[in-house]
Every structure is written in C-alpha cells, then in structure tokens.
Length: 85
Length: 212
Image (cartoon, rainbow over all chains, first blue to last red; front, side):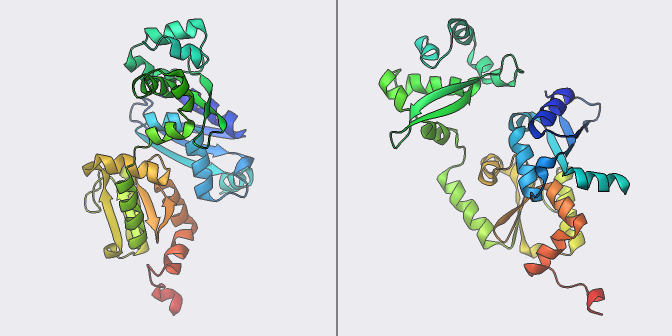
C-alpha cells in the first residue's frame, strides 16, 4: 500500500510544488485509490498531456500499486484563478 | 549459485548477504519497501554498439537481471558485461511485436479508439464510464468509436499501458494520436478543447445554435 503522507512528500519534492493535496478516495481510506492536486511552476508552458506524463513518471512505482489514480495539475497562476472561482 | 553476482554488481558484503537470504518473492517486493530499503544501483555495461553505458536499476529490477544472468548467461562474467541495458529493457517489454503492430493499425485505422474497462453499454469502472459519457455529451457518433474491453484480454490490458506509456485505463486515441485518460478527457471537455478537437477532426458537427 502507498501512504498518503509519503505520496504527498514525494510529489512535493519531485515537483518543488508549492501545494500538494492527496485525497484518499477509497471508501474507508485504505490507501488504494488517490486523487492528487499538484501546484507547481514546473508545469508552466506544458500541455496537459505533458504534465500528466510528468506526474505518471515521477510516481510510476506508486501508481502501479494503486487501484485508481486521478490527478489535477496547475501552475501557480492557474491555481490562484481556480481558488478565486 | 548467484553468490558472487551481487558483489560483481556493486553490492557490499552485508547487502549481498541480505539479498541472498531473500526469497524470490521478497526480492520482487523489495522496491516497494520505502527509502532505507529501496536502493538504486548503478550498473555499467556494454551496449549493443559496444559502448560502455551506465544504467541505474533498482534492486528488484536488478534481481531479475541476476536471475537472467545466472540462467541465460550462465554466470559467465564476460557475458554478463555484455548484458546491456538495451537487452534489459527488451526483456522487460511486455508488449509483443504482433500486439504492437495490431495496436498501431487499430489506432491509425479508426477515428476514435477507446480502451476501457467494460463496454460503452456496461462500463465496469467509474473512469471508463465518465469517458463514455463525455463522448455522449459531445455527441460523437459511437459507430466512429472503436472500443476495447481490456478486462476481456489481459495481454491487451498490459500491452496498451506500455504501448501508450500510460499507466492506467481508460485511454483515448483520436485520429491516431494519444489524447489521454479520464482526467485529461474531463479537463479538455470542461475547457472546450475537446469540442474544438472533435470539430477539427470532423467527428462532430457544428451545433445548430451556433449556425443560427
């Protein structure tokens, strides 16, 4: 199983992310299914496919162990806009 | 029998002892243990062009290399050096040449290809259902969408992940181009990019409201 804390820490480090949210979407929260939100300036100028591939690559081993994985990636500017909605 | 191999590949004595004491099953799960136990080792080998190349491998991957080296390569030190990273990755390729060819043809021949769990009528996973619904909302004619139920074909299920270099199912191809999975489809649907793409590819008609 993949722990929420570890996933959070890994993503923060690998993307120098200013904000990471990891939501355990498994009923009962058993660490099988996660939704993550990553806000990082490294996503600047990347297409959504490129961004998602970057995330998939960074946590390849973890994703392989999960039942389900869903991600949302934002640049700091996009995230600020999202928060103001 | 494989006693000397870890040392040759740069394990110290203690690591060798631990490694040799593990069952094959434990070795396979080794990289799933965290930090302290998950090591990357650096292996130098000659590639097919006889250039010396370095290759970072985690311990679990290395264990397979060792098993292979000790069988196929008969623990012959000279031959082990020739066991290159290219060979290594070839060994790890799950996708067969025929599967790759079939997938190439499939994604290029069809307007839209959807690899999913279940069928459009009866999706067996929420993410797959979401993608089907997005196509429905966009008004794409389902006769233009070739769907594959990966739950019915395990080779396809593994093969398509490697083919697309994408770890999850569903996966969508439009006119031969990989678009993405559920997250990307949903994102593009909401942003209007998907409609734009479908229009451009002639997969949906301009909405009548817009024409009026």
